[in-house]
Amino acid sequence: MKRFNDLLRSVQDEVKEIFPWDLSDKLKRESGPLILDVREPYEFGMMHIEGSLLVPRGILETACEYGYEETIPDLVTARAREIVVVCRSGNRSLLAAHTMKLMGYKNVWSLKTGLRGWNDYEQALVDGDGNTISVDSGDEYFTPRVTPEQLGEGESNV
Image (cartoon, rainbow, N blue to C red; front, side):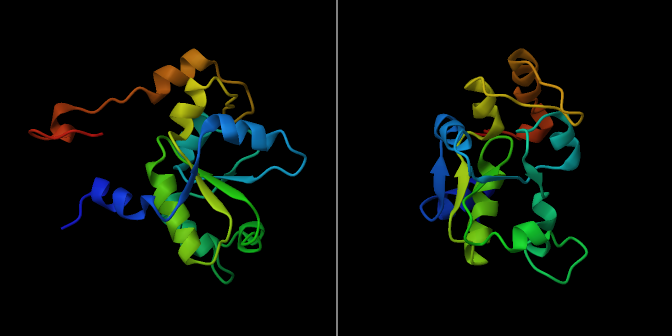
Protein backbone atom coordinates (compact mmCIF):
# COMPACT_ATOMS: atom_id res chain seq x y z
CA MET A 1 0.00 0.00 0.00
CA LYS A 2 1.31 3.43 -0.93
CA ARG A 3 0.83 6.36 1.39
CA PHE A 4 0.68 10.02 0.41
CA ASN A 5 4.42 10.65 0.80
CA ASP A 6 5.13 7.48 -1.21
CA LEU A 7 3.02 8.84 -4.06
CA LEU A 8 4.89 12.14 -3.93
CA ARG A 9 8.27 10.40 -4.04
CA SER A 10 7.15 8.20 -6.94
CA VAL A 11 6.46 11.20 -9.21
CA GLN A 12 9.06 13.65 -7.93
CA ASP A 13 11.72 12.67 -10.46
CA GLU A 14 9.23 12.94 -13.34
CA VAL A 15 8.06 16.50 -12.64
CA LYS A 16 10.10 19.66 -13.00
CA GLU A 17 9.92 21.89 -9.95
CA ILE A 18 10.59 25.60 -9.71
CA PHE A 19 11.47 27.68 -6.66
CA PRO A 20 9.54 30.86 -5.80
CA TRP A 21 12.43 33.19 -6.71
CA ASP A 22 12.72 31.58 -10.16
CA LEU A 23 8.97 31.86 -10.72
CA SER A 24 9.11 35.50 -9.66
CA ASP A 25 11.71 36.10 -12.39
CA LYS A 26 9.62 34.26 -14.99
CA LEU A 27 6.55 36.34 -14.15
CA LYS A 28 8.47 39.54 -14.92
CA ARG A 29 8.80 38.47 -18.57
CA GLU A 30 6.29 39.81 -21.06
CA SER A 31 4.90 36.36 -21.78
CA GLY A 32 5.17 34.74 -18.37
CA PRO A 33 3.84 31.27 -17.59
CA LEU A 34 0.23 30.40 -16.89
CA ILE A 35 -0.14 30.00 -13.12
CA LEU A 36 -2.55 27.16 -12.38
CA ASP A 37 -3.79 27.02 -8.79
CA VAL A 38 -5.16 23.57 -7.90
CA ARG A 39 -6.36 24.36 -4.38
CA GLU A 40 -9.99 24.51 -3.35
CA PRO A 41 -12.09 27.64 -4.08
CA TYR A 42 -12.16 28.71 -0.40
CA GLU A 43 -8.34 28.55 -0.29
CA PHE A 44 -8.05 30.52 -3.52
CA GLY A 45 -10.45 33.15 -2.15
CA MET A 46 -8.29 33.61 0.93
CA MET A 47 -5.13 34.30 -1.09
CA HIS A 48 -3.55 33.50 -4.44
CA ILE A 49 -1.04 34.80 -6.98
CA GLU A 50 -2.69 37.58 -8.94
CA GLY A 51 -3.72 36.45 -12.42
CA SER A 52 -3.63 32.75 -11.58
CA LEU A 53 -6.27 30.37 -12.90
CA LEU A 54 -8.22 28.32 -10.35
CA VAL A 55 -8.81 24.69 -11.29
CA PRO A 56 -9.35 22.59 -8.16
CA ARG A 57 -7.44 19.30 -8.17
CA GLY A 58 -10.70 17.37 -8.09
CA ILE A 59 -11.74 18.56 -11.57
CA LEU A 60 -8.32 18.93 -13.18
CA GLU A 61 -8.62 16.09 -15.68
CA THR A 62 -12.00 17.19 -17.04
CA ALA A 63 -10.93 20.85 -17.08
CA CYS A 64 -8.06 19.80 -19.39
CA GLU A 65 -10.34 18.15 -21.98
CA TYR A 66 -13.15 19.33 -24.24
CA GLY A 67 -16.66 17.99 -23.72
CA TYR A 68 -17.14 18.41 -19.97
CA GLU A 69 -18.95 20.97 -17.84
CA GLU A 70 -15.61 21.71 -16.17
CA THR A 71 -13.77 22.24 -19.50
CA ILE A 72 -11.60 25.36 -19.51
CA PRO A 73 -10.75 26.02 -23.18
CA ASP A 74 -7.71 28.18 -22.31
CA LEU A 75 -6.30 25.23 -20.37
CA VAL A 76 -7.17 22.63 -23.02
CA THR A 77 -5.27 24.61 -25.65
CA ALA A 78 -2.24 25.28 -23.40
CA ARG A 79 -0.51 21.91 -23.83
CA ALA A 80 2.59 23.56 -25.30
CA ARG A 81 2.49 26.63 -23.05
CA GLU A 82 4.67 27.02 -19.97
CA ILE A 83 2.47 26.27 -16.95
CA VAL A 84 3.39 26.45 -13.28
CA VAL A 85 1.03 24.52 -11.00
CA VAL A 86 0.69 25.85 -7.45
CA CYS A 87 -0.94 24.72 -4.22
CA ARG A 88 -0.41 25.38 -0.51
CA SER A 89 2.82 23.43 0.04
CA GLY A 90 3.86 21.95 -3.31
CA ASN A 91 2.38 18.49 -2.84
CA ARG A 92 -0.95 18.67 -4.67
CA SER A 93 0.76 20.67 -7.40
CA LEU A 94 3.38 17.94 -7.83
CA LEU A 95 0.67 15.30 -8.35
CA ALA A 96 -1.35 17.63 -10.60
CA ALA A 97 1.69 18.45 -12.76
CA HIS A 98 2.40 14.73 -13.10
CA THR A 99 -1.17 14.12 -14.24
CA MET A 100 -0.92 16.96 -16.74
CA LYS A 101 2.29 15.47 -18.16
CA LEU A 102 0.45 12.17 -18.64
CA MET A 103 -2.27 14.13 -20.46
CA GLY A 104 0.21 15.62 -22.94
CA TYR A 105 1.25 18.91 -21.38
CA LYS A 106 4.83 19.50 -22.49
CA ASN A 107 6.10 22.36 -20.31
CA VAL A 108 4.52 21.99 -16.88
CA TRP A 109 6.22 22.74 -13.57
CA SER A 110 5.26 22.48 -9.91
CA LEU A 111 6.02 25.32 -7.49
CA LYS A 112 8.37 23.76 -4.94
CA THR A 113 7.36 24.87 -1.42
CA GLY A 114 3.99 26.03 -2.78
CA LEU A 115 2.35 29.29 -1.86
CA ARG A 116 3.72 28.90 1.65
CA GLY A 117 7.23 29.30 0.19
CA TRP A 118 6.01 32.06 -2.14
CA ASN A 119 4.84 33.99 0.91
CA ASP A 120 8.09 33.21 2.77
CA TYR A 121 9.93 34.76 -0.19
CA GLU A 122 7.68 37.82 0.40
CA GLN A 123 6.02 37.69 -3.01
CA ALA A 124 2.63 39.29 -3.56
CA LEU A 125 -0.59 37.45 -2.84
CA VAL A 126 -4.11 38.82 -3.24
CA ASP A 127 -7.48 37.82 -1.83
CA GLY A 128 -10.64 37.09 -3.81
CA ASP A 129 -11.36 40.82 -4.14
CA GLY A 130 -7.87 41.61 -5.41
CA ASN A 131 -6.65 43.16 -2.15
CA THR A 132 -2.99 42.62 -1.32
CA ILE A 133 -2.37 40.21 1.56
CA SER A 134 0.35 41.09 4.06
CA VAL A 135 3.23 38.67 4.55
CA ASP A 136 2.24 38.36 8.23
CA SER A 137 -1.33 37.40 7.27
CA GLY A 138 0.12 34.86 4.86
CA ASP A 139 2.35 33.45 7.60
CA GLU A 140 -0.65 33.07 9.89
CA TYR A 141 -2.73 31.41 7.18
CA PHE A 142 -0.01 28.98 6.09
CA THR A 143 0.88 27.86 9.63
CA PRO A 144 -0.11 24.16 9.88
CA ARG A 145 -2.88 23.35 12.31
CA VAL A 146 -2.87 19.58 12.51
CA THR A 147 -4.72 18.19 15.51
CA PRO A 148 -3.37 15.18 17.44
CA GLU A 149 -6.24 13.11 15.99
CA GLN A 150 -5.26 14.12 12.46
CA LEU A 151 -1.59 13.44 13.11
CA GLY A 152 -2.12 9.91 14.40
CA GLU A 153 0.04 7.95 16.77
CA GLY A 154 3.73 8.13 15.92
CA GLU A 155 3.04 9.88 12.59
CA SER A 156 4.43 13.03 11.03
CA ASN A 157 2.92 15.27 8.37
CA VAL A 158 6.29 16.07 6.75
